[in-house]
Image (cartoon, rainbow, N blue to C red; front, side):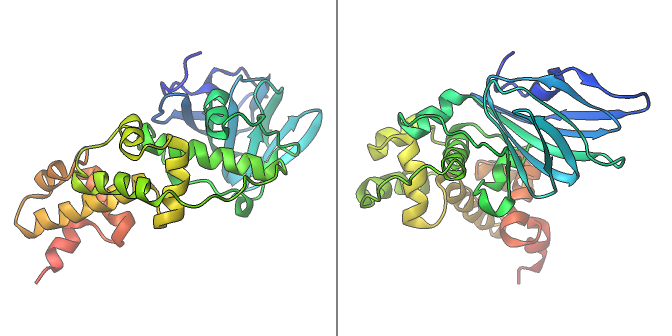
Length: 281
């Protein structure tokens, strides 16, 4: 089965259950080694199966029940379930109302790259409280791409969450490579409309992509991807003030289209760009 194509790994698993059940599966945008899916099940469930990926799922609504490593588990709204590669599991509604969740399947080779040679972490309980998992919201925005540095940041966050949940000792603190991080930050700021690939940022900073993703936030309080988005919004606001139509402002700032600009603008400022433009004196 291919990874990163948005085909929906859960959709390939056999389903079991009584008549009258429903299942809705929506594939999200993926990236290299990352596949994301939104699932809703009522009155039916997945038969026992296994994947060769990490499965990180977020219960959105209802009660999810599943068997994992021979024991029954429950995952409530706001909690995460964590499936280690090649571990047998199933999944079914815990109540007649059914449940909904979003899941990211991540190639363990990506997790290993983020860990830098440490053994793959194993989360024995299979369920994490939402407060214990420091996972980026972008991981669950299935309609938005998660390639490039966005994917790097998501995988690094997943790897760090898995390490903490497995009880692994934290890596020793090292001084921030501020000069290297500043080079990457300036390169993003110089032309935010152009998406720099992870390999390009590695060359500019002289850091590997995993260190860059983690230490950029330590230094500047946000991720490289979020920093770029906010600089794009700066450009879009300047273009709107100059009188450009919203669609043209979106293109000039490097957004995919006007709706992409609107989603990011509202997420950052709490209003649409049209409302903001109408309020300008």
